[in-house]
Length: 297
Image 1: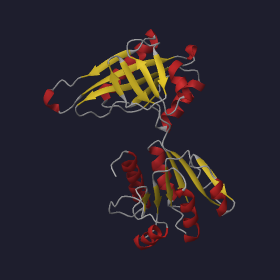
Image 2: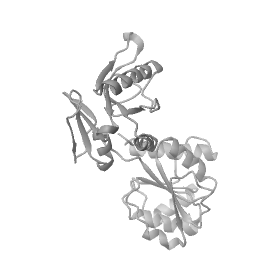
Image 3: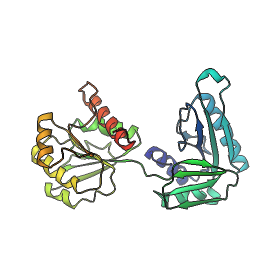
Image 4: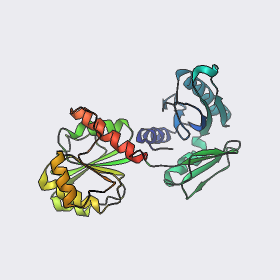
């Protein structure tokens, strides 16, 4: 739950406006389905919604049940079963739960203080839930639904030139938090990023706390800063560090920093998708990061 920053912002906006909220969670699937267990969509009492779980028919059903939950204040469980067995579509089960202003939003609001834990909810009793410290795979077990409370994925971008902007835009679309860091940044130029760290001198990078970031990309494309940025990243716990540059220079950098066999250093950064526009480079970088975080590379 929550790994998309747009969802978090929607929930916070709804809370700030004192609106009741309905969360639809995919709690189990079988066969080929658009969404998998753990995916969510949100509906509020102002008839606003966010999140895509499947077809227009499915969302009409979810909207209908969300209104019912707002009125009854009791959760609903719904199973989507294809009418045509030869369609190739699988089955999905959904938990549609209400979280109300008058109750201070219950478990939903508590999630904001329980990131990186697992929420365990009864699908038959709205008042029965708990948070456990261990990360348990998202699953439905008997009448208990286990759902990991994740923070939005966080990308740390070194460099603030034109080619950075498409990467920030695509990261925003994916729901990632984006932070740009560099020396003497024109902050108006990179205002589409969530956060900006404007270094007064290059050595200040060693004073930056990098523990909150999941992945980093060095796009400054400047030998005078690239080496220093890389040095600062290598002592962090990030399991994805990408660097832009030509293949020959990247081979030399791998040798210099003893990274030939590193499973977290990717240089030149990005998957080879056979295109070189700034937008396609951003796509190749995000695709590689997604592949790494999902255990595909």
